[in-house]
Every structure is written in C-alpha cells, then in structure tokens.
Length: 239
Image 1 (tube, rainbow, N blue to C red):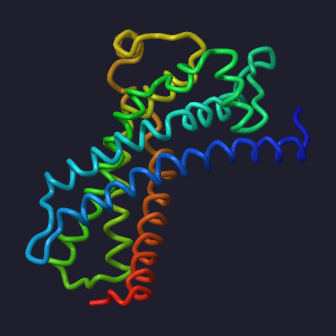
Image 2: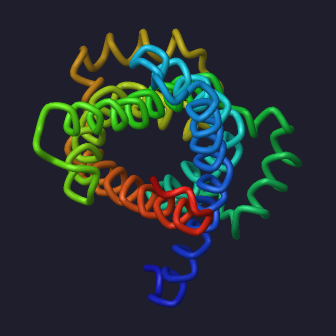
Image 3: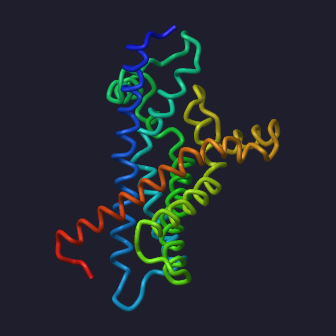
C-alpha cells in the first residue's frame, strides 16, 4: 500500500511529464496554427473551412512529433500504477524517464508510437481548432450572439464534442502502443484488436474522454480568447 506522502510525490512526478507534453505539443500546435491563420487572413476574407482544416492538420502533425517523447513518458508513468511491482518502471520524474529510456531502450524508444500519435494530433487539432473557429463563425453569423464569453463557451463545448468523437479510436490505439513492452506493428495491433473486440473498441472510454476533453477544450479556448483580447488591448489593436 502506498502512503499518502508517497502517492502525492508520485502524482507530482507524473505531473512533470504532463507539463513537458503541454510545453512541447500544445505550444507547437497552437503557435503554428495561429501563425498560419494570421498569414492567410486578409482584410477582405478569412480562410475557408477546408483551409482551416489543412492548417490545423499541419500544426497538429508538427505538434505530435515535438511532443512524442513527453507523451510516451506520460502514458508510461500513468500506466505504471496498474502494473505489478516487478514490472513497474518507477521513473522518478520526466528527466529521469528520458535518460533511462534512452540508456535502456535506445533513443528510438522516445519516438515509439510517433505515427499514431501524430495522426491523433492531426485529428485532435483539426477537430478542435478548426471546428471551434467554424462553430464560432456560424454562431456569430446565424444567431444573435456577439463575440463574447457565451459564444466562446458554446463554440468550445461543440468543438470538444467533435474532438472527442473523432479522436476516440486513435486514443485507444495510441495508449496500447505506447504502454506496450514489446514492439508490435500498427496493422498487426489493429487486426488483433478488431478480431478480439469487434468495432466497439473505437469508442471505448468515450464518456470519460469527453468528461476530460470537454472541460479542457472549454478552458483552453476561453483562456485563449481572453489572452488575445488582453494582447490586442495592450498593443492598441482593438477594433
């Protein structure tokens, strides 16, 4: 049995991997998407939905690659709690995990699952960022809502629903690939999963995923919109 101080310390160690993932993955995808959208937005026109999806997909792909090492560690450190004592990896923190993975398994272990992870990042960013911008445009154009907190909340809630549904199948595969001790090809894993579990595996855990991703998406875009408003005011760019 793990004591409360030990459990608290373990949670803090796991938090270090989550923080590194956000610093690499999220910063990259949001930053690249914002730059691309600003580049292709003119005074007369804004990017179309297909263009937004393409920009978000590019941003997500780059973010998935940048954040993969931290994502592997994050999955492993969370998965450790369910393993028997003799199979636990017991990474002390994210730095210890990076060093041990490189030394014990080679540097390629840091990129385990990079393709399904990047695919998931493409789907997540396209379904989250592009859908948010699209829902926001629709709400502003076809309802009486203005560009305010209510619009941002509604658009981000809908974006969270879309993102959860689109990413659910890839999330299941990504977790199984990254937590595996032995390397198994993606096609072999898919074939085995469909053979043993049918097609229901694609949306396994959808409800807890939405319970996590829905509030996360809402908080992300509410903060982002307020951040942009403060930045525009600070720079004297208010319309």
